[in-house]
Length: 367
Image (cartoon, rainbow, N blue to C red; front, side, top):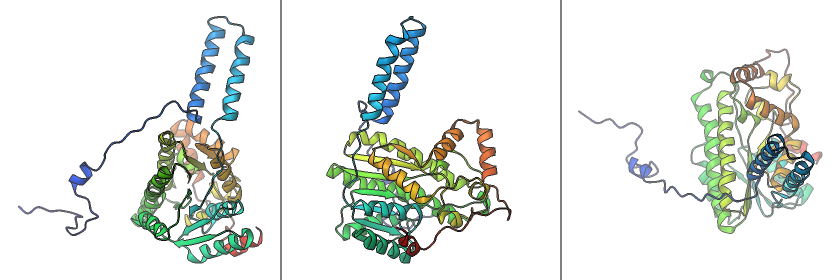
């Protein structure tokens, strides 16, 4: 009986065999525990508060002896750790042609950074480049790249190396969404979303992150979403990719304890008034059109920049975004799923979010 082999190209070296997959993970671990980062500060806070309550309630110690030292300890930890370190050097920003990515480009340019602007739309990348050069006298290089295509992250990395450019700050800002039922979306769109939002983000982090580790310093900003805190009927695949980004980035921040010169910050925006709305066909959903929670991309970008400077593991773009993320995390799943389903339901002409600004030439006039 003939053996059938599906999806195997005999001449394709890039297609790994089962042996190379089985033997391809060296399983290197560098656990580091005794670090005063926000994770351990949270643990110290919870443990100290619990010990204080036990001391007062069960051992009858006077509260005046317990509370002041406790407050002093916690306030000191919160004020002085983690120690902030302002980003330095050249910044690579994906998704730089519009929205949050473009606004981050202007912020970093104003701070005196050289830029590598990456995006799919070559014309808009050129417009952002002109804006940062004219308004901030910044040096900018543009690279046109569609990171929703398999293998594109490695090609981008190689293109940067060919130009002999060093990346000190990586901003993974590119993202793709899609509103509607899962089975109404094309397989191609689902593949593009998962490739861009997940695979390319991880690969760029690995490629440029390893270079940062060798140099002993670096900053990484992952643009995620409050969607990473909820399952979301109506934007199922997109929110699932942001679950992935949230889990990846949180764990990465702890792994980076072994490399103290590297900072990884995750930005959690709420719904933001960018071209993402129309590209995802979400302009008539309740969340975008009628909730009143849509944020300004400049404010979101500023929150991300300040979080990165402060060395935060995670930063929400606003109090509203933080409230939404935390509420959705702790609600019963049935309630959370129902709310998310309503939020992503189409209003069918009853309300529509206004068209986001498409042209960075116009944005340049207000910088």
